[in-house]
Image (cartoon, rainbow, N blue to C red; front, side):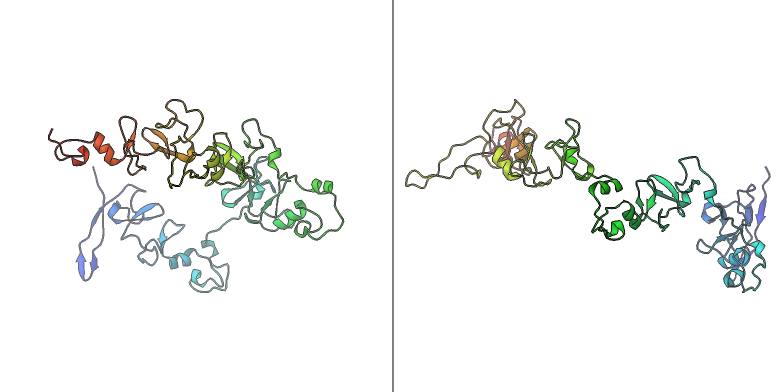
Length: 408
């Protein structure tokens, strides 16, 4: 196997002479474009998609060292600094001092060295019917396309149909005739007409257009979507009308009109913070929900006032369950009282869903929350102290669990 090597001349850095370095010759097209040797990762510089030696990464004319900020790739497959690239390939003629090195009075001198560009009119390249620019029918390429009405337009064709004003995404209006207009021309052509609509008609009109004439000259618009009936079970639960995205409100897994999204009792407008889903498949504000479905009895606001029958200031009341009526199915109600639990008052534990007033320790009746809740193996809930006394470890040293120390 025969290897070819390249010898680099001696270099002198800070007065010290470096020995010539031997570099293995790479196959054609794979090595450094300048010296042809193998380029390893520790010394490679990238340009024109090729790896160069750091020592070879110099301007092809003035031998100035280059980096990524001042490297210019020439059409002759070499690299140059910006000044040499401007002299060699930049525009020439009167006024191009930096490109030509000096001002030249002959605008055609050395003109054959500069790259030539050809302007192509893509509008002349006709596209298949229905796929080109809607205005000229030419093929639209990615560098010049503008989107409107789901179609691709040439940038130079994207103008108002009437006044030929250049458009952009802010002022472009899609007309019902499948063309584009500026806002002013759209208002004149398709906007409302009549006395007071100066922008729509261009000027005030006093000719007294009838309602039929106005309807015939502009697109029809019906703002009352409740009159558009939806299929059964798919519309607004209150009015049955079709619900569109711009006005929908969600509750109980169904979509409501914004104007229908109010309390069924007091008709107060609701939002996601105030709405309560009732068991009657309606929505209520919090106050009406509590009156209709909340717990009743002493201390729950809607009970009768207290009446004293003797001189002693005593208060007596009977313990009541949170609801009246039938109990829930087995395993679906509150584990303590058995009545249904609705969303406005539910508390969750491992053993089920509880009423807020039933969510207390089974032994000491202390109110519980998520920080001191303990689920017992008997299906009840306890505070930490009672849970430790009932189910905690017992014996010497387990004072909290056993209540008292035992020797047994």
